[in-house]
Image 1 (cartoon, helix red, strand yellow):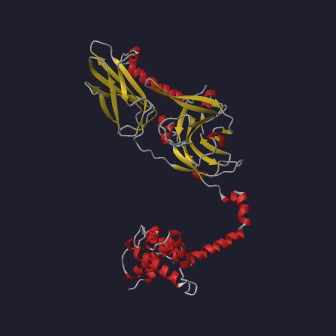
Image 2 (cartoon, rainbow, N blue to C red):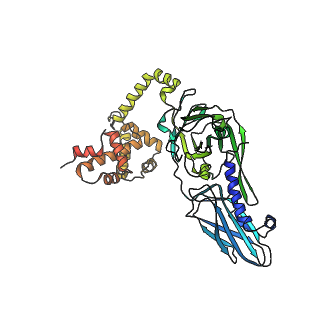
Image 3 (tube, rainbow, N blue to C red):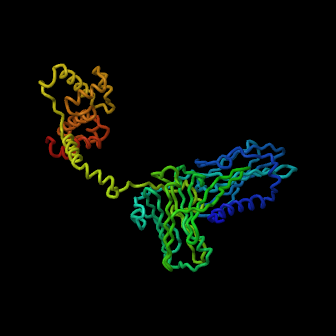
Length: 492
């Protein structure tokens, strides 16, 4: 059963650690099973976002002369683990702070730490913890748009949002990947230009080459794939399959365990001899559960053949194999809205209601052009006029306060907020917020005419949150900008 070649990377890293640390140290596994040294922190599966890792041990052995600490981690720009000595602790408390600021993030399988206690007159005692993840370095995650492509439409949609696979290592080879969506599925399309590729290469190599699609619908940014991660493989030869991951943590050991299964998703592979190949894979919305998310974390990895016919993995997000399979490093893909001209129902609705929309647009324009106009005394009672003048006086006194709210004015005038808003509406045509903005704009006009203060200063003195807000109000009420108004109206 094919486990992607990922499993081999996990096994290779674990084996190197076990051989170099346990065997080279001459320590029998049996001696570690009944030892008297255990880890208090960090434990297997821990995620450490800080720039240091505090190693704390519980040592119950007698006659301990020293405790040596070693770590296995992945150096930058490498797929092979490195084992280093972290130091020696000669007396309690058995703690050590490991500064990790110069390490890259440790993802997918994480780092492993081994502690060996030397016992005077006895066999060494050993404890280990694996799968400790460092997420202390920020990751430059891109936000990539996913355009709409109708179901059944040929091609891969617009090339505008296609992403290039870099680090292929051969100037004659290139590859691009794109993602589109529709109501039924999420479609991944990859185009590979490879003049050295031909279909009569050894069969196993062709079967191992292809495309890996990794999706995290939850965007939890876990450092390793979980059972919520969607993982699909489309080989150049053979049937596509899915891979489900579960994390196995036991006795200080950590392993991401993959399990593959056949899928019947629509996947097409087109091969052009000595030119390259194209892969198109459609992930149905049912794969995501009840509905397809609007935004996902995602990565694609190409399995291309090198000059010797061996598979080389190239990640769309870049980085080594451990970053490649870690949702922590993946980019965000977000769906663009479906274009209006592709929605027949919406088209019919727009055309059938066009008269209403025109009328509504005219009404909106008239409302914007409208300025507050006091009703005639004949239309208003003297009592209502007096109440409004009292409200207007409070607003004029307090309008320079940026935090001025309708509840404050209503309390000052002995009214409830709804009645206050209705009173202003009847007398000016504006609601409270628009009327307050209008009054501030009127004061700003006078300051622009008579002073040489900056627009920012004037906006602040008139109660606006910013000069940008003042500019929006000028556009709404006067159809101009503060700068143009001052240029035309300022008194010399």
